[in-house]
Image (cartoon, rainbow, N blue to C red):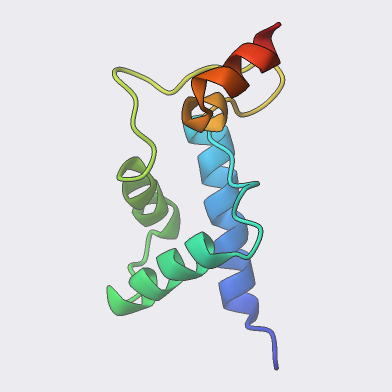
Length: 94
């Protein structure tokens, strides 16, 4: 299987936009399905010229916040603990 350099760069840009602009992390996307699905949507949309803006708009559909992205001193903080059960959250904070 040959690697697609454009696909790899695109998926890297997804991670960069998520972390730097939305305080989000894609570390749970270990199999790359999220990145590959966004890449497939990008191709289906006709490869819009401004990749970063297109990615930003798509990520806004997946990472929601009220007014602005959460701020983390030690890196991305979103979605992180938002999807933990109450018992898991309690054990992390104590």
